Length: 141
Image (cartoon, rainbow, N blue to C red; front, side, top):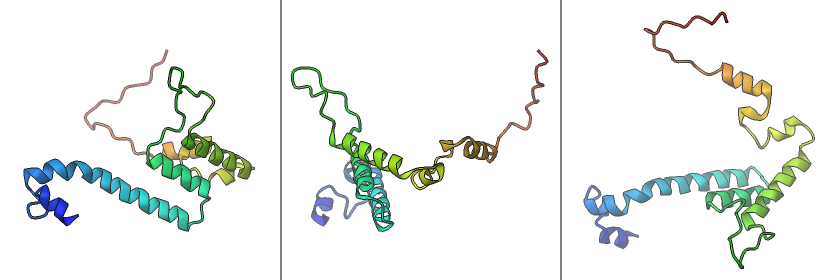
């Protein structure tokens, strides 16, 4: 790795044009990859099922979860992708385990899962207004 960095001018000169051209474009992807790895390992240590971990892995690798079949004689409309199979397996697992809404809370943290949680979320948001703006009066129509 060190020799490769030296070839692009990044090891000795980290503010040079060569470093900017070769290394900086990869920084965001490297940071995301590190975050994905940390999340995966945390989920694995927490005991999530292998199906969930496999689905997360395929999402991180940007595999299409529901691909459109390619047109032409090579199209296999009835052959789902590996990622789609992972998604279906996890969805079936969630549905079989969740007899009530409280079981779904183990998998979903979004506030849109119920009207009550959405209302709490919306009421907790701050509203920012221009202090010089005159409030509009409600219409009497």
